[in-house]
Amino acid sequence: MTSLPAEPGAAAMAAEARRMIEMHGGDWDSLHAFATLHWNGEKFSVGTWCAIDTSFAPGDYGKIMEKAAFERIQQEPENPPYAYALQIEAHVSVLPETATAEELAALAADAKAEKLDERPDARECAEAWVADIHGRLWHARRFRDAEGIEERFTPAPASAGPAVLTAPLISVARVTGILAWGLEPTPAEQRMYDAVKAFRKKGGGANG
Image 1 (tube, rainbow, N blue to C red):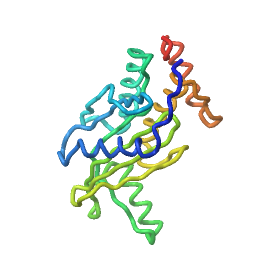
Image 2: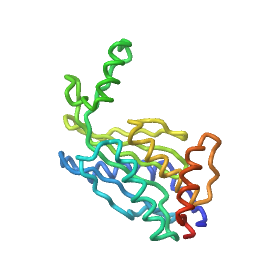
Image 3: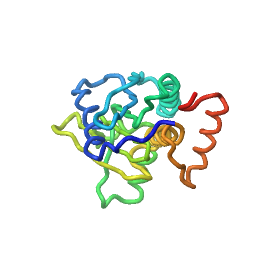
Image 4: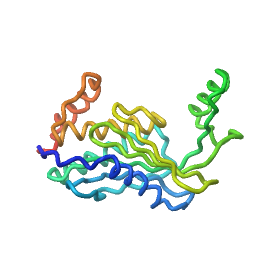
């Protein structure tokens, strides 16, 4: 079991999310990306970098991230990831606080049907999320029609962004924390227990 190093701090974590957007650099209509982030107590480094074809459905991203993450743990158990990053392009629609129940329901329906790009108020953006082994989530976003990068932090338990993408990202990070770093699961992580047990049954884990 790997010993926990000194925590990187919020600024270092936020910088990784921002770096994902800066690396995107406005190169629109590009592949999405998933990366393992490794912390040595002083700085981050990128381990596995996985390009994700946009033909994959959002619901498939969880399996892709899980496979890449745990292959990395098995390959280098002495240097497990401390965090994971996911960068995508998407269309978003943000309603005002005065939105009616009908407007909110219509937005939810369009999001579920993956039709946000067809809405008149849709805006295209590049987004990046970074989740650490404690379940905290950092977010950075650049809109195609605007300058600058927006940033946001969500403390654990994180529940921000499109759950179909952020939930598995956070789950992979938390399972890594339990398997590789010896963190204790919370009572609410029963489903994560099942993933840990299944992974260990197959011979996985930071100790091989």
